[in-house]
Length: 318
Ligand SMILES: Cc1cc2nc3c(=O)[nH]c(=O)nc-3n(C[C@H](O)[C@H](O)[C@H](O)COP(=O)(O)OP(=O)(O)OC[C@H]3O[C@@H](n4cnc5c(N)ncnc54)[C@H](O)[C@@H]3O)c2cc1C
Image (tube, rainbow, N blue to C red):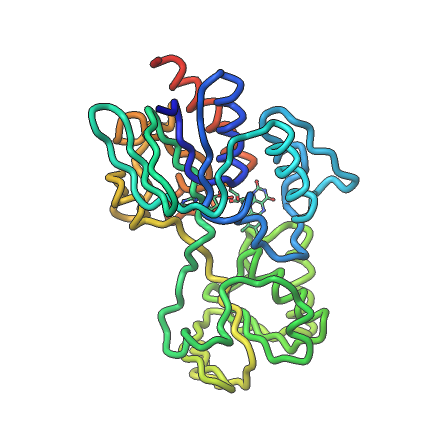
């Protein structure tokens, strides 16, 4: 029987593994995709808003030439940390159920069954996109994930949203020769957009390089055009691709299936904020999964401390 099974091999799952290793506990990390799967699926051009030392785990220095690391820097770092510490990680194995019997857990995966005294759930939020729920959303030209701007050269691209992801897509595709239209629900570009990027997008909109509809919603998507509901009425614009950068959410069905209680409004899971233990004894939450629909609350910078909080609690209760 393992002391701990950790679900999710993202930065925070790895941080939990490092803390468990330091405490001399037996554990396995089970990850449904590749190592740090979410980061692997980020845009190839992505730069973190955090400086590298704020993304460090287990006290291992994250050395970069530029103060804000890129996706490639982060993949190098987390891979090196995992491999050099010989963390036991089973990749491409999805946890499908977790049940509690007589004080210990049975964890069922796509490949095996495990027994563990404790479980840490660090499954993030990047696997499930928030849908627009409008006609045409299932067309292949509608994307919730974005890899690279080159593909969109000379294409008419509608970007929905005004978060960091949306604004990065709008600016990058515009600079590679796409004709970009932004559809923004609010009256301005989100104040949470990186402070060094926000003036850039505001000026591109002001000069007319990027067209933006504020207080507007995308209403329907067809093969060659889209309808936008604007304060001046319905506008139809020609379109090749829709980038629906409307956010992501944790797998609430999975959390409910395990028996974790979620709040009514934002589906924030119930946990003790000092120990990270949920309403299920010995089942802990770590990382960005803790935020429910408020996915901006937690990030690597402020959630990596969950690892020590959890392991300290496990050791104290042993
Ligand atoms: C574009 C972008 C930029 C960001 N920039 C920053 C930044 O600058 N600074 C910062 O601090 N944060 C940043 N964040 C947030 C942060 O990178 C992520 O939220 C981070 O990945 C959180 O780590 P995590 O380990 O909690 O979750 P994740 O990295 O999402 O890891 C969860 C893992 O669990 C796996 N998983 C899910 N379900 C299962 C299952 N059933 N069985 C097995 N495995 C499963 C997933 O495949 C995934 O690998 C950014 C996020 C995005 C999207």
